[in-house]
Image (cartoon, rainbow, N blue to C red; front, top):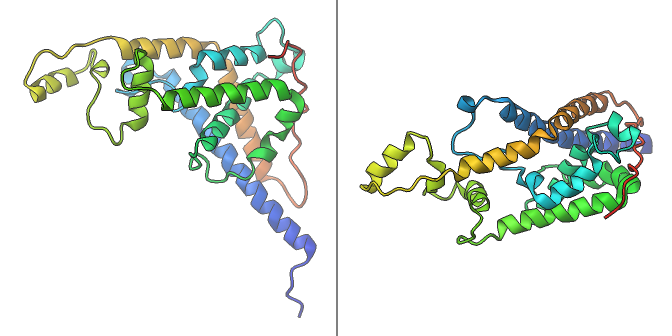
Length: 256
């Protein structure tokens, strides 16, 4: 009995492996978007304490990143009809740019299945090369700037972000997290002093981030629907059938 697998069976096995990897990446991104939207929708009293909004997706609120993203905002005066019909696109591109940024800096544990990323983003490069390349550079620059921030940097928002990225190994809580919390009494008792200065920096930073995000809420919601639909398609793939990607033409805007 011939037990050597045929070329067809090997090809199908490889297809299943590839599609499973793509499914894993899609589910990973879907969970990110869902988590962001859940946190966004919480009233003030129910939000996570001692945290920043978008603290693990902080490049999104970077000014340079926002400038580039706004070129593909569906409500832009320069947006094409196709972009207006697919408001998920700029967020979809951003999420992949963010993963590329972390991977380039050695954080390859952000996605367990890395090998499908180029294949999953090749259509963006083909249809929107200049814009996506600019987005990649801006997101990577935002990550590098944040990671290399000096402890004495005058930008308290970035210093708080740095603390959130390292909070697992740091024990000291910055004073800026304590405004309006019961932790203030504990800190004063622990330090045996009443000279703890309370500033509204954390609240101001979260307000700034939420103001930026408010312009994109519907796009993030559209991206969640798109990713969930994509996950269903991948589960239904049989044999050699490929997922049909939207033929998204680059919106007619001036390039950077």
